[in-house]
Amino acid sequence: MKGSKWLRALVFTASAIAMLGSGQAQASADASLTLDEAYPGGLPAGSLALDDHTLVLDSGDILTVGIFAVEDCPEMHQCWWKQTNFSGGSLFVHDVGSNGIPWTDVPNTFDNAMESWRNRDGQDAKWAKGSNGNGEQFCMDEHSRDSNVGPSNLDTMSSYRVFGSGSNPC
Image 1 (cartoon, one colour):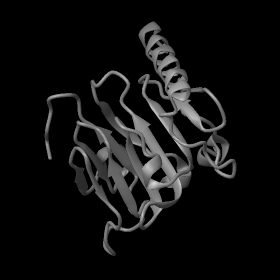
Image 2 (tube, helix red, strand yellow):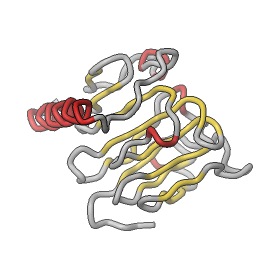
Image 3 (cartoon, helix red, strand yellow):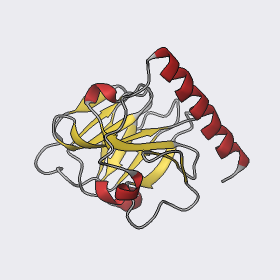
Image 4 (tube, helix red, strand yellow):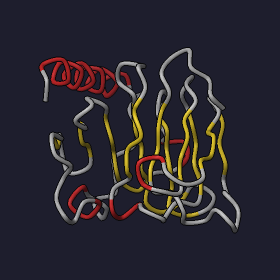
């Protein structure tokens, strides 16, 4: 990772520690879903595991896996669930620098396994049916949610993108 990516991860970690002290941090992940299970073939190149559930991606952005309720989706995050009504395994991402996250493939256990989502960020995001943004794309307008993506879109997400601050493609 480049130096700035490590710095962004350090700033995020410091922010998370401060949130823990103020009681604003997200709930702890269920120990039954870990990064090892999400990435059975190994973590993405250039990434850094902070614990069993939290990963700093090569871009410097943060990815968390676990079992969370909808109210556990923190502000400034995009969140996806494996089941309708925000239940089951969860994938949360955070654009640390508000510069956006390029098209990123979801962890193996989340590929084609998403049924609900929430965007708690002031930035638009998209998810796509194909890897690296290929295939049909769906908007996640800022501060919106969908508890059931519908029968034709169930279990079809393979990648996601978060747009930078000031960019509103949806």
